[in-house]
Structures are given as structure tokens and as C-alpha cells.
Amino acid sequence: MYSEIQRERADIGGLMARPEYREWNPELIKPKKLLNPVKASRSHQELHRELLMNHRRGLGVDSKPELQRVLEHRRRNQLIKKKKEELEAKRLQCPFEQELLRRQQRLNQLEKPPEKDEDRAPEFIKVRENLRRIAPPCSEERVL
Image (spheres, helix red, strand yellow):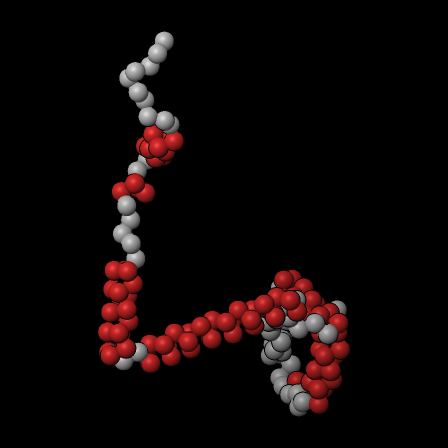
């Protein structure tokens, strides 16, 4: 039922010294080897059998598909690179550089034209404004 490894262990057990039960008093109860409840369980035997089969095939316990391993490796490298860049950027910014960046941002905001109220107006108002521009002016002197 078990593999060659366990048979080898049994052979090694034969080399170990065993107590001579014949020298003991025959009225005494002879000790029995206790069963390991983990090894005796059915689930453990099935797991052990599966591990041995995978070992024979050359599969590792933690083996993943190659694509998954490569993607995880790339993702990990990207995160490490991103963290290094962030730390380097923070490290390089001294108070003087930070103040320069703030001033540059303020200047960009001032140069940028402010948003007109027309941009925020609802669509129907924009359409009405366009129609007024396109349509010819109405004259009261219409001839019927």
C-alpha cells in the first residue's frame, strides 16, 4: 500500500535493537506498537499517495503554470520599481524644490483661462444661444 520509501524504513527498523521479550516474565502483557492516528487516517494516506505520484512525475508541490509565475514576477518587479521611484522622488524633493513646485502650479492655474459660466450652463440654454446667433434678426415690419 505504501511506497518504496516506507519499505526502506521497515528494513532500517530491522537493524535497530529490539527488546528481548522472551527474557521477560510470560505473565506480563507484551507491549504493542501504538498506531499513529494521522498515518492511519484515510485522508492522510490519500494525500501521501498523491504526493508520491506527483514526485514520480516530477511535479513540485507548489508548482504553478509558467505563465502565472511570469506574470506574478513581472507584477512584483513593477511594484518594487514603482515604490523605488516614489521614494527617490520624495527623497530628492527638498523644501526649496517643493516651494518651486507650488509656485509653478499657482502660475499654471493663473495662466489657464477661467471656465466661463456658459460652459457650465445646461444644454438647452447653449442650443438656444446658438439658434439666436444663427437665425436672422426678426423685424417687426413683416409683410403679410
